[in-house]
Length: 497
Image (cartoon, rainbow, N blue to C red; front, side):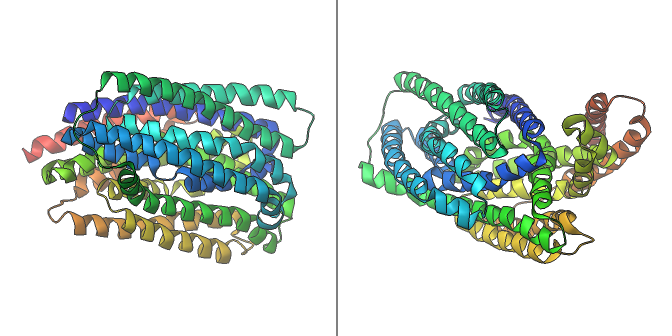
């Protein structure tokens, strides 16, 4: 069981590195073609797209993966197939209804909610993706629940490659057009990529179904759908609320910056630099963690089903250790070379300053993200929802009051970044400890050792950064950190023995 867990994590990690790199290339191409103002416009619409994805299919992938893992463990594959069929029918009907409603209201949304008429084309352009992704989410959940990771991993890579190819062709086609058309082209490319993903996932699912015969008895379809929605609705509500707050934040940032004395078009540009450029750098290393999170949820569900608290304790601690290694390694690099990295990727040194201040929150935010995944795996969807609402309210309040201060302006986001994550960690860890009475937090290997190596890595990095090219600097610093961690963690383990 343990070896399969790590093999699947490795496959997903490699896949996520590739898909993350391709997604990153997509944003770099987009930012260079449409500039920071165009990226600001894109970032106004992106949270709305994500929010409607949660309306149409929020929580379905995670819920299907949990149900599939449970049915697999109990040998009830017939019930699993009936659940998948019910989920697909529901998703097709529901997503078409929500998408039609959005199309009818798109003019009102662009003018009165996003407060920018230029977003209308982008809203209409992402509508097909809402239906496509909702259906795809069902099939993805099956593969994750069965821990058959290779198929969705390869498909994700192909989907991102098709998206990049599409955006390149579309941007060249609309080269002389305004930024609203170019922003819409980005969402059209997204729909094309997701369509290819759905077709490939369905083909793989048919092959899987052929090789896995139905077994056992099954409840009726309505009961199975009810069981699925009972799991997915809290996750969907959590996603809707968090992305709704993300939309509020995206709308709020230019307005609050205007109060600080910054013109609206420049404020839109700063939004693009923050959420369309700097945040991509901050979260790029976390693509490694997303694979771990995807495998962790059904894995913890199995542990809970069999009440194997020893495995639960081990996997949670291992997850946190790996998370903090990635976080502190990334922090030490970005503190040293945020300006150089911004110039290398975006040809814009002003983005580097935003990256620098945001980077202080990386260990805290990464830890918080993984703690949410653990709550998911432990079946604490209601707690996850409540905690997310609290954190989103903190985000809005801090941005509302801090950003209008002229001396802070856009950098107020980094204050919110840290404060909100600290509160999130407190709430999530409290819930984990209440759920697992015998859970023992490995403070040394999760916090102390990664932090110590991060300090060493920062010192070494400050010495070598002016000697070697920036891409080599990043690679070498990660290698140094990884080597130091392996050596020192082995030494600390041998001393305990």
